[in-house]
Length: 480
Image (cartoon, rainbow, N blue to C red; front, top):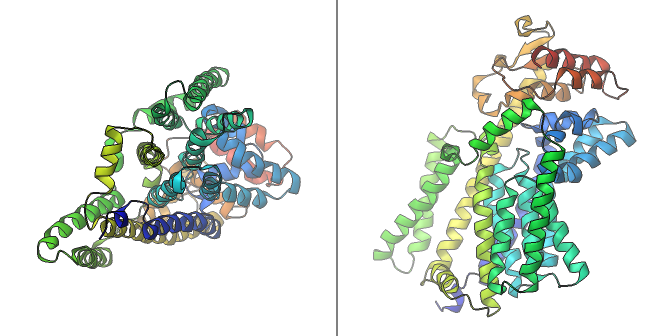
C-alpha cells in the first residue's frame, strides 16, 4: 500500500469520520426529543424552570460563568413559554436547541474552515463521534463548549484580519468562554496553536487581545454576580473533584480501553502469521469477543456517570484541536520542526495504519451506539416508574408531607438512572404538571431552590398549576 494511501485524510477514512460525526449530530436531537432526554438529570430542573419562566432566578444567577448556555438554549425556551403560555413548548424548544448544538457547531466549522482539505472540520466530526456520546443525555454545559470550540478554532486560524473577522473571532471566543469554567483550557489551547504562525502575526495578536479581554470579563462577572452561599459551597466541592481520576472508573471507559488495547495486541500477534489480513482478522476476533461480553456478562448502564465524563471532554477536545491545527499548518507548509515530525510519525507510520484506524474508529462507535441504546431503554423504564409514583396514591409522610412519595419504591435495577436532586421536578413534568404525589429521594442532600425563591414563584401568575408550585414550595422550605 502506498504512502499516499496511508495519509490520515485518506478519502475513505475521511468519509467515514465525517459521516460518523454528522450522523451522530443528526441522531442526538432526534433521539433526545423522541425519548424526552431533555428531562434527564439536571435537565428536569432546567425544564421545570423553563416551564415556570424563572430560569435565571432558579439557578443561572449562580453560574454567571456559563451564561452562554442560558442565552442560547434556556432564555429562548422561556420566552416561547411566555409567548405561547404552553410549558411543553418551552421544554421541547430547550431540548431541541441544546441537542442540536453539535450539528450547528459542525455547520459553522465547515463554513469557517479554510484549512487544506478542511482538516479542522474533519477532526471536529471525529471529535463529535468519539467524545460526545460519552456525555449524551446529560445536560452538562461542556456539551455546548465542545460544539463552539471547533468553529472558534477554525475562525481563530482562518478569519480574515478585518474588522468583521475580528468581531467573528471575538464573538466565538466569548460564547465559548461563558459555556463552562473548563472552557478556559480550550481557549488557552486555541491561543497556543496560533504561536507557530508567529507571535507578531495578526492571528496570534488578535487571540492574545481576546484572551485578555475575556479573562477580565469572566472575573468581572464572578464579582458582579457571585453565587449564593449555599451554591458556592457546592460549587467549590464539585470543582475540587473535577479532575479526579475516579471519574474514569466506569464501565464504558473500561470497555473502550479494553477494546482498543485488545485490538492492538491481537493485531500485533496476528501480523506475525497473517501480515496481509491481520487487521481484518483482529477486527473480527474483537467483535466476537465483544459480542460475548455484551450478551452474557455486561449488566452495566452508563447513565449518571455521563455527567462526570464531561472531564474527558475538557482533556480530549483540546488535544484533538491541537492535533487538527498542527496537521492543517503542516499542510500549509508552515515550519513546525518537531511537532510536524511527530505528527508524521504518529499518523503515517507503516502499512496497515489506515485499516487499524478504521477498525478502532468503527469499534468505538459501535460501543457508543450500543451503550446509547441501553441508556435510552433504561431511561424509558425509569421515566415510566417515576411517572407511576407521581400519579399514584402511595405516599411516605415521613419525608415531610403526606403528598410526598419515596423514589426508593422503584426497582433497584433502575438506580443508575437516578439523579436525586431533580427527581421532584421530573415527577412534576412527567405528570403533565399535575402530580398526585411529589417524588422525593430520601438520600437527597442538595436542594436547588431556597424557600424564598420557591414562594415567590408560587405566587406568580403562570400556566403551571398553583397547586403544583405549592408542592415545590413546601419541599423547598423544608430544606432551605
